[in-house]
Length: 168
Image (cartoon, rainbow, N blue to C red; front, side):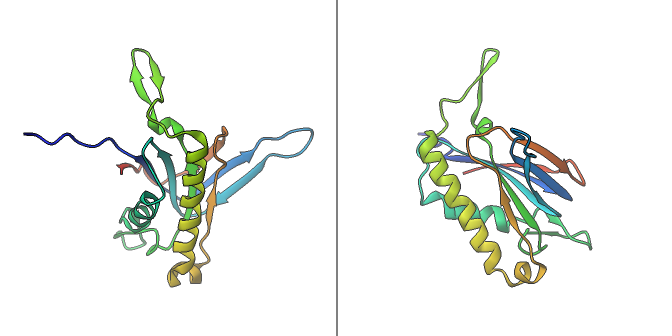
């Protein structure tokens, strides 16, 4: 009997970048917009689905930071930890969309409060992993992140299109 595949618990989209800038707060009442930005590194879009829990987050962080997708100066593919490179994390609920007719539905996405909790844990673990890396510490790489549950403007420079979708 064929085994029924389990539904995905999370989905991540990875983009190699030469620089990226994310608006985390729009301009209001005469105040300028607030932006976070990174230099060369990796942009991670992340979406959690129903059934995801705290035990899944370390596995995702380990996989995404150690997968060899970034090209170094010699043309070899290395992890963002080995590059070393910056990381920009963007919560992306639309990665959970499923086309039904001519509309997208998001019934598989995790509840907003639980999603925020997992997203915060994800950001914290990424920060810890990069700060624990000697190469990253010496290169003074950074982890920046967007705000959960808000629309955000992204400006991205890439040396490809170089995009990978990974499910967990």
